[in-house]
Length: 167
Image 1 (tube, rainbow, N blue to C red):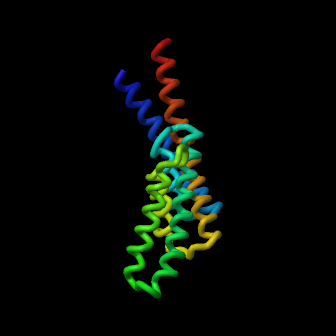
Image 2 (spheres, rainbow, N blue to C red):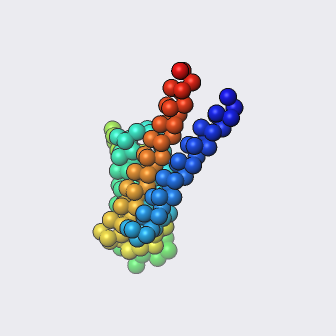
Image 3 (tube, one colour):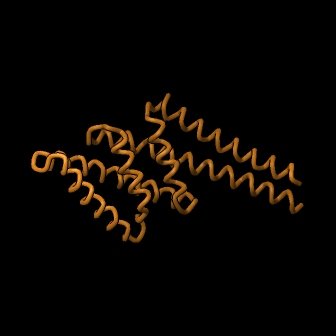
């Protein structure tokens, strides 16, 4: 029985790793997207509600966070001539207030998703343009899909194991 449990765990781990590796390879070599940004979507998928609907909501929150990041960059550029290095204080305060207020929305209220999007934008060191939003958003979408597929694989392995143990 222990060997079966170990084999099942190994099957889940290898399957999920194959999904992650495939998503990373596809992101980098086919779409020419940053692999780290794909993993933002992967992480977002697992922040809550492990199903397709919640995965899409989590991705939506990441996209909102990306938009907030672009907005923060514009605000920084606007405030920098007036406040110099203290412009960061105003921008972070404003964007954090918005992100935390959005957390009160009835559906798209995943604060972790908002901040993953913000982090992704600032980590990219890219200009606040629609192209940056599209690139990071697509990478996050690939990661969210990969997270869904990895979770579906794990569920399938677990379900198959439990149906075999009943028989």
